[in-house]
Length: 299
Image (cartoon, rainbow, N blue to C red; front, side):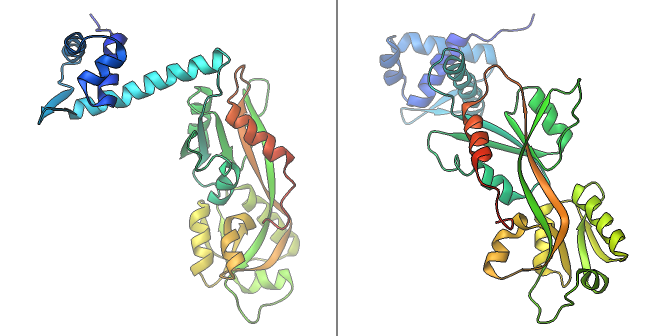
């Protein structure tokens, strides 16, 4: 027979764990300390572990107790959130974000910046492959996925891609006194670091050099924007990168834009599902993004 969790016992444990005192928690919950102690003992019997130990007349969580408290926080936090969302109360204050692991950190920060540092907002950001993030979104474990590729869009697809911004793609590198001025000459003489074949930027870059009749010297292929940013700073050649990825370096003069790559842009998406009860925090971010003026020059 599978044991079931008694949530009344769990709530008593949760109250004592946060108060740090059996007497204070009992007074707040309008029960006697002895009754509270009995309920917690029953929970410990059900779980098979002691949740508290006494040290100098103080209750201290054991290791199983700390684990139980983590779950209790999630359970009762989700309950409060449920009442707020479905009961029409205060807006929930948790936003769960998934991001493509190779996505520009500068773009992520720009999109999420209105919520960063707010004391009444819990921001949870996870990264991984696009397929993993979309599965988590479909399972309602995430509110939104940030990516630079749109998901498949057909009658069977539940995903809604919101185009947030288009960033120009440039050749950037460390400052040098002399470089060829024409793009074709630059690409023919300078080693370049490029995104991997899976990237839409790489597809556009390959088409561009084909039109120019140039065979560039590929120094490295990188699928991670953070690594591409690092190579742009340390490598002697040039990097094919959206300006937003190296925004700070361009502003500081550590890197310079050698050439803008014509007709080559990276599009950033916020991918969501159609939901009856959308997260108000996400709605505010999407509204802000739609009303914002397109950034000039990638800044």
